[in-house]
Amino acid sequence: MTGAGKGRKADSVPAATLRRGLLGWYDRHRRALPWRAAPGERPDPYRVWLSEVMLQQTTVATVAPYFSAFLERWPSVGALAVADLDAVLHGWAGLGYYARARNLHRAARVVSGELGGRFPDDEAALLRLPGVGAYTAAAIAAIAFDRPAMPVDGNVERVIARLFGVATPLPAARTELVRRARALAPTGSTGRPGDFAQAMMDLGATVCTPRKAACALCPWRDPCIARAAGMVDELPRRAARAEKPTRRGVAFWAVRGDGAVLLRRRPEKGLLGGMMEVPSTEWREGSWSEAQALRAAPVVGDWRGLPGLVSHTFTHFHLEIEVMAAQVNAACAEGVWCAVERLGDYALPTVMKKVAAHAMKATLVHHRRLRFT
Image 1: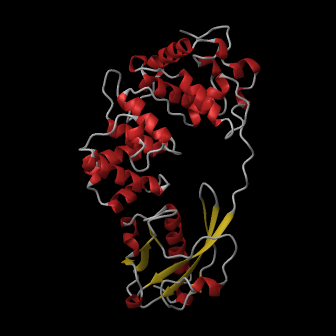
Image 2: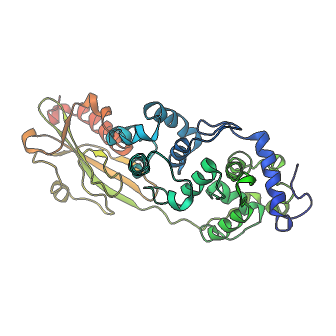
Image 3: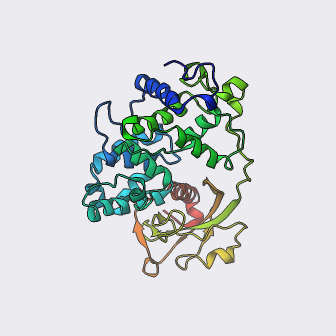
């Protein structure tokens, strides 16, 4: 069907009619993705789960090479379960939100051990896996097992807001958007809930895009309330975002006699939990005096401030890090000593890679004053 519900607004078009229009479009235009089963193939729950975790707040283009690399190293949930956590974190570097990687590893152990290698096939059971929230549980249930579930992400929110002309700004509109999306979804496996969920995702990603939506190609162009009202570019509306705060910290580039540098592991809980880091203070709003910072130094040394700052932006705040450097007595330090050419062997998050690059460049330029080689 072209333009499901032609001449009628979405509110007056039966859900079954809208579903037929979208699924017909999907059968012709579905994306070929590394984790997506071909038509007629049974989806692999491991691939579906892995892709959905990776895709959280990350684009398809970014995820594709990571997904392939993960599958090559850990082709099954059992292989991932017995993998070293540091190796998994290292493989995750660049995808952000390292808690997802830790939960991925924990969930793999649960599935492989407690569940005998079989993924749960319904939302309630999936929600009990580490790191699996409402969206991910619905996506796995629908796509991997054809359960009647409707995952609602940003793409789906946008499609539904435009289709039904929901003008309430996000996040206040989220409850209504989820309700409307679920009302559209198939209620039984014969209605192809997995394909419907993926069709909604594809429609938002390729046609009903945030800017310059291709309304002429949309299977729902006729019943779309936003298109009829000339409001496509306005929806979904979003409440004004608060300005991100800036936090500050100090990192300590400790170098022993042979040139190796000190790393340590961050606490398991909290931002970048369990990752390796260049030792640093906490990150807080407000500046650090030298005396305050040195109380957090990992070892006694003749610490000198390096010129410049390391800047990094997380989802909820900006970060500025000053770097102090010193040659130290290795016997007095706790952590892991690493030759600078082997830093890539450790699961350093992006911000710490920036710290290391900044420190190496600065100590090279100022090696005479700092007496570094």
